[in-house]
Amino acid sequence: MVFETSGVLMGEKDDQFAAFNQSLRRIGYTGKAPHKWMDLFFALEQTLTPRLDSNKRQIIFIDELPCFDVTGTRFVAALGHFWNSWVSKHDNLMLIVCGSATSWMVDNIVNNHGGLHDRITHLMHLHPFNLAQCEQFFQSRNMPWDRLSMLQAYMVFGGVPYYLGLIEPAESVTEAIDRLLFSGKGELHEEYNRLFASLFKHPEPYIDIIRALATHRYGLTRDEIASVLQKSGGGDLSKQLDNLVKCDFVCYHRVRRKKISKTGGYYSLADSYVQFYHSFLETLPSDEHYWAHNLQTPKTNTWLGLSFERVCMAHILQIKKAIGIDQIGAEYYSWRSTDPAQRAQIDLLIERADRIINMCEIKYSTSPYLIDKDEDMKFRTRLGAFTYQTGIQYGIQPTYITTFGLARGIYTSSIQKVVTMDDLFIE
Image (cartoon, rainbow, N blue to C red; front, side):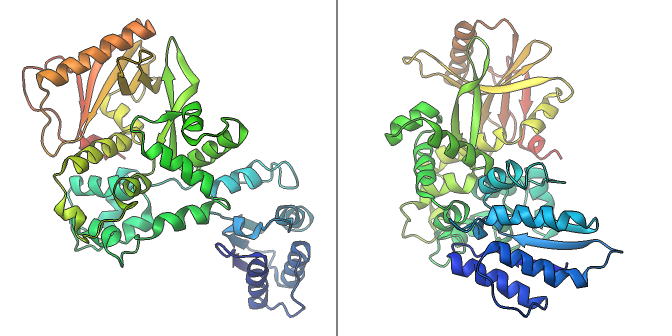
């Protein structure tokens, strides 16, 4: 590591220049402190040139890169010039840039049309952990949790290692949720506002979109979001939605009508922590043990069901493997009835190349799930509406995804595939 620096989160222009200058001083720079990016990168070049060792790989590492791009400073242009005029001429020199603002990194580095166009050697997008990786993480910390506890933690904190690392090994999942989120001193008590402020220079429109989606269980189309927010559904909104998808906050669901449509689908929240915040923390309860005292309430049970649906949508590959179709080409999508009177929706359909569709019903339960008469009729009604409105002529394979499988009963015989919580932990 021949040079390392980091942008200042929520810092002003002078803060960014000061941070870079201090890093220059650490490697021996003794000149005046430049206040232009072209001059700062030239100072870095002049300081490193006599120190380079051509016999080994040497690294320049710039963390929180988006923070340096203060309006009017032309940081990206200067970075591109630095790469093209000096770094790229040294085969052993590696420039690594990193930033938590995913949308900025994609727009300004990955899809750059200027000096950094097509210059990336390797791209690493750090997505949240899946359940299998979370299990490995918990086991590495000697946490004696069963998989239901791990699943419940995942439904609250998602697969974000930083959040999961705040859980004490001796805690139960309920104790961890109360301490981190409902206690006035909890580390994640104020995380929501910090989160968006650190990712977006102008977080307000993004928070407005998140809030709109948080209050609509079945998600919204782009036009519906525009209507809720009373704004145009044009370029700005499309860009903001795309950024939220790239940052793993929002998921875009394709839909099926007469055919699978890649446009006209709907958006829903994908981030577990953000959804939990809007469900329970936006108006913070005064009870610091709120979660322990409200585990069996209707509000909590409804949230558990919705959160489990989000977990399943993030583990499509594991579901396909559990069904036994991981080697078969397949598309997955959601479906909404076009008849306003029905309000029917199917959360997950997996359409296979062998002309079979797995129609998936997702249910969270702390014991084997029992299908009763009403549940069976609802499933059949949705199935009938789907086949009639889409005109689909594929075979339909009723599939249930539950935590502990299905309890035996008179309405289980028609269910051809069952996926359990353990299946979601497949690596």
